[in-house]
Structures are given as structure tokens and as C-alpha cells.
Length: 528
View 1 (tube, rainbow, N blue to C red):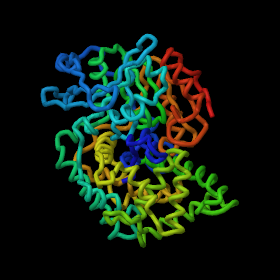
View 2: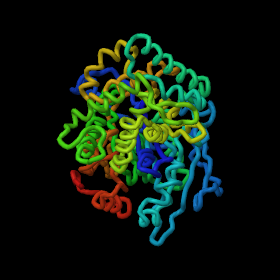
View 3: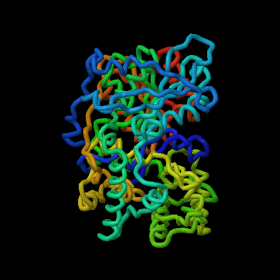
């Protein structure tokens, strides 16, 4: 149930979170436990590249020419392209893909198109490029590249999957994900089933074809439609998995690829969720150390250990579980334990949101006012003031549950894994373990599996990792860089989720040099 977002992002510190994220809730599959790599993980097969020649049945898709039109965002044009619903049976129908671009502004020779994806899965790439990347990326990059984005199938403008209405999502996000007994566990299972049934009823055919592999194949159709010989791409968080998958399928067409906040595609979902839980604990420890040095920290004063601060926060969550904190919300929502937890998790994505989180926790813990934490939770879920949600959460589950087999098959399996998750994070472990149960009730079976991506023959690919990244732990960047045959690992020693465009001149200059001159950083380069 916990998840990550995308742009509406990039507004307050809380929404910046969205611009580059991985939705926790969806990362669920596999069946390994513990902290050591399993034999299955180590033996994971590598993703096989597709033939270089375009199959005749796909020619009509590759020969499309975008009919660009103005679309409301200043300087941007929009178009719709088609892709086959089922690549194995292209005659079975089409999927309509929403595409946007902002043409290179000059001066300097145009370098082609630069596709961007903010993560999720489920984040609107179109929204991201129009609200941030197309106007906020370095001027030199925007001068030389057409800034382009395509919403992946099932997301935002590309035939979005819908599962619940606003009131239904309000109820879903308030569901207790730390059940105290069998009855509460049953309520959680019912919530997952209701969510899954809604998705299945809305898009029974599409739901079988929203995998990352299919989205990567769609990007190659977009590349061809744009007239580019190679794909140049910046992907953040889940967008790194999408970009790496593209490189694995089309290594000869991979141009300048930046994978920022990298995922490890070789991990099954339970392992993925467990390691992400550790990542959130690392981020919380950094926040707690900073918090207790400040006079307004509600988790303890100077000398309070991160462990003690974590226990204080966990105690607050338990109080909210017993009695939700008033918020003054017009829809009558109190701050439940689940919403409070999401509010805290949201602020872990960007250290720039730490002050906002301190103030929100102070109001909730000392003044019995949960409104500020609710704002953080709502920004994470992309809920607007009218009580409507984007399809972020729906697409997130749809992609993740198709990409990997479910992490857990039953509540009993979750209970057996709880010690591992609670060891990984005493604060978040219990809730994140139960959140990993969501795909167990998905209406369609997973079509993907954990596998290595080597992309042999691809041009140099820059993999970026942040040492205290909460959502994509640094070890994932190391792992992906170790798999990709041409990877250059670029490390940011710092806090927050992803690194490009977040204040490090060292990181930005290294990536800009690669995008503009084709000069990748030296493998192992570190920045702070």
C-alpha cells in the first residue's frame, strides 16, 4: 500500500518528492527472505536483446509521424502515438500513448531528443517534463535537445488504469497496515481485494499488458517516430529500471542514458521490498540525527539517539492507530497510523522537506493537529483538494504486480517475514511488510521475473546512486552498474532520492558533460 509518486511534484519540498520516485507499494514479488542473496538471485538470467530488424507486423507502428499540436503548456506540443496492445499479437488492438515535446531552444547544434521519465511506476512523464524538466533542466541541455516525454501505457494520458473513486481511495489509504489480530488482517486483505477487483473491472485487457518490458518497447516506437537513430534518456528511480530494460532489449539503439536513483532488476520483490525498507531506515536515521540537534524536534532533544527517536515516532504511530489525530479535513478524515506513516515517508525523499516534517510532527504530537502530516500524505498519494486522485497508485500496482510475482501469498507468510522487516526498520518495517501483500490478490498473473540486465554492446551508460537514498538504496546502483556491461557508476555522498538537479554541482557537471559532449564520468567518480 505504500508507494511513491511523481510530478505534481516539484512544488513544495513534499511534492519535489514526486518528481523522482519509486512507489513502495508496488515493489512486491519474489519469495526470498533474510539479508543474504539467494541462489535464485545469483543465478538470475540476463535479459535477452531483441532482433535488430523490425518485425513486419510492427512496421506500421515504427513508421508513424507525430501530428504535433499545441496543448496548453507554454512552449510544448503534444501528440498521440500508437503501440500494439500485445507485442506477441500486434493485430489484437492498439494502445494510445500520450507524448509531449519542447523543441530545442538553441544556440548550438541540436543533439536530437532527450526522453525523461520521473519514476513511479505510475508517474506522468508528460506532467513531469511540462512542469519541471522541460523548463528546469540546465539551459545548455534544453538548448541542444528537444525535451520529450511519453506517459507509459496505463499511466496518466496513456489509457490510464483506474481502480477506485475518490471516496474509495480515501478509505483505502486509511486502512490499517499494521494489523493487531486476525480480524484486522482480514480487513487489510479485503482492502487489497477491493482495490485489485476495481483495477480488473476497469481494464481487463490492458492490465495484462502494462509491463516494463512493453513500456520499453513503446519507447523504441517513440524513438523511431521522433526520427532519432538512438534513444537519449534520463530516468529517475523506477525510470532507471525502464531505461535499463530498454538498453537490454535494444543495446545498439541505446544512446546517452542516465539512470539516476537506480533499481536492481535482479532482485525478486520480497528482497526488493526488504532492501527498500532498510533504505527508509537509513534515511530516517539521518533525519533523526539532524532533528534532535534542533530545538523544535518533537522526537527528542540533544543527545537523543536515532533509535530512541524512532521509538518515540513508533509510539506516536501506535497512538494514531488507537485514536486518529484530528485534522480539520472537510471530508472528515482523521490522521490514522497509515496516513501518518505515509506523511513521514514522503518527507524522507528530500532532505529539503525535513523542516516541514519537524513542524508537522510537532503539530501532531504536541498540539493534536494532524493537518500538516495529512498534507504530506496527500501530496504523496497525489490527492487534490477536491478529494480526487491521479492514477499514480493504480498504475503503480498494475505495473509492479505484472513485473514480478507477489512477494507474499498470504498473511501467514507476512507474519513469518516480520522479524526480517522489523530488523531492517524498527519504525517502518511492520507496515512495509504488510504493504508487500498487495499483489497476492491481483487479478492477472505476473508476466515478468527478476533478471540481470547486461546490455552488451551498448554505449556507456551512467548509473547514479545516492549513499543515503531512502527509496533506491545505494547498493542497487552498485548492483546495476555491475550488471550493465558499459556502466559508469557515479556516486553522490548525501541524502535524498536521486542526485541530478538537486544541488550538487559535481553531479550536475558530470551528467551535463555526458549529455552534451558524450563524455561519461570516470567509473567510480564520487561527489558530495
